[in-house]
Length: 367
Image (tube, rainbow, N blue to C red; front, top):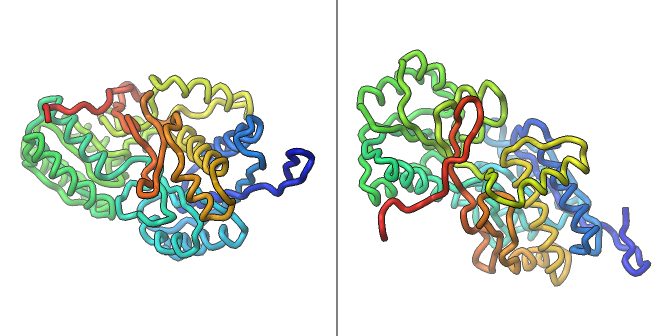
């Protein structure tokens, strides 16, 4: 619907959403976008309504990367001036040069540092280097000096492990066992047994994480319950009740924090608007923040095509975030396209079929 500030009719601004993976219930992503866009117009943050254009183009790792490229191109052809997505590292790496060529900013949730470019922005659902260092710090603060590692063969698996090795060296942790596995291992039990025989103080998982779901029955059958920490793959626990059960005992990197005072008011507004309470996990929070970022970029943009939105994104400073801890804020700059700052990553643990807050990053030793 066109907007009519001062009685003049303005066309809506179009923002795209590129779905490059199986996201489950799409409304958990889309409805927070819509709420943020509606609130921005009602509060006068934007003087135009914002229209969401959705393109479903599931691609890597299951299908060809071409689907993501074609999906993004379709959004550009439909007139979007900014895109939320792609969501995962595999497709983000492939798309980066096309995003710069087409001059339409893309706000991805990916964790890889290999996604970068003039029009490439990141509001990460984790970060490979950041998560790995948080995991090493957790081990050190809890007195775990000998660690067994599952290293997944995947684009993110290698990046995680590179930073984790540096973190272990920094904090005096010795990697005493390493099992390299695929994303869908055929014989996971032998890998778990091998690490148990190495007698580590704790385990760490480096990768996208689906094998951790399969480890639950293996730990039970072996009667082994070691301290263990994993990447933001931990957030699989929210997808299905049986996955929550399978991840019992794991600590992981998350972004949902009940200590953030902005969370409950958002959940209340969401329930009032859509008649349901969203699941208490990162997805609705990150979706809402992603849409808010574009609303603020539109407000600050000198002109509304892609280059103007890029400039608007680079002008954001200290925007409060509902994702992450209470000191998380969002901001950018001409050479700062990773927009989360502060305590945007934190620890949670699965206990008794639910997740509990397990703290923020704290360096275990003085610098």
